[in-house]
Amino acid sequence: MIKIVVDELTSEKLTELGNSAELCDASGRLLGYFHPAEDDDYVGYDSPLSEEELARRAHDGGGRTLDEIMADLEKRT
Image 1 (spheres, helix red, strand yellow):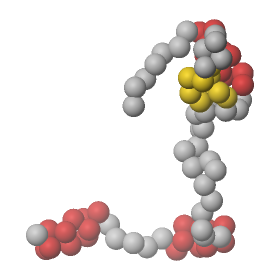
Image 2 (cartoon, rainbow, N blue to C red):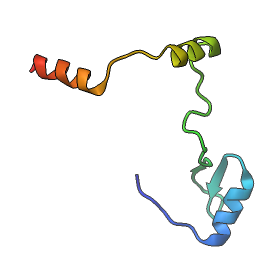
Image 3 (cartoon, one colour):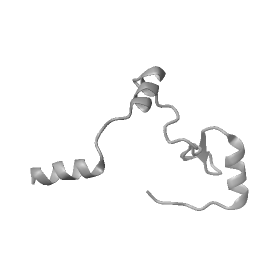
Image 4 (cartoon, rainbow, N blue to C red):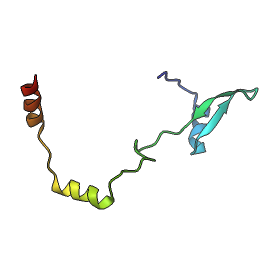
């Protein structure tokens, strides 16, 4: 993805929006869309698991250590 650095005034205008917007040139031609960055990458995505199930899994722990996973992978090669 290409990164474009905007001037301070444009940055302030975009920050004040607080919402998505269409960006157009002076003639009204659509240039593209602006979507503000979210603090949380997963905003807007719902987990298929209930809050109770997520809490249970966090509490119970489990899984394998990295060393166990690496040993298993080495056996396969």
